[in-house]
Image 1: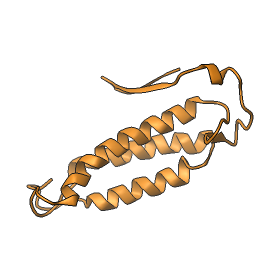
Image 2: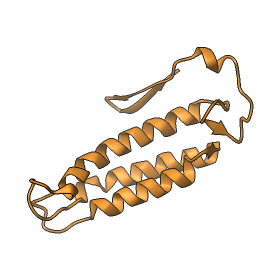
Image 3: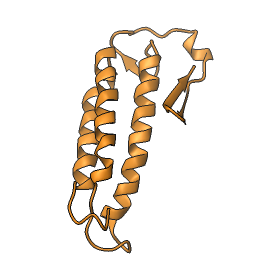
Image 4: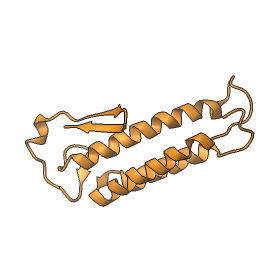
Length: 123
């Protein structure tokens, strides 16, 4: 990113991710929005190789943000995929298409991890 010369502003990518997550994976969630969010995260991830920052590595928040965005995208995808799988509402996870709490979900652990072919979600 430091040697690219020109490219995309990491702060803009971060703002777009934050706005999209708030709009599609916010407090009240629904299947269609979560599906759309997964696609949007993939589009944002595809822009990562174009990120560019000026200056050096020392005391450069833009340089640090390039690496933070990678992690923000990973966490955003994990949250979205797990929310999509959880077909109930419980605590801060509110699905308007599944408004009731399901006792069966209370006995499950949900796991998201990066696999060789992308994010893997297990229930």
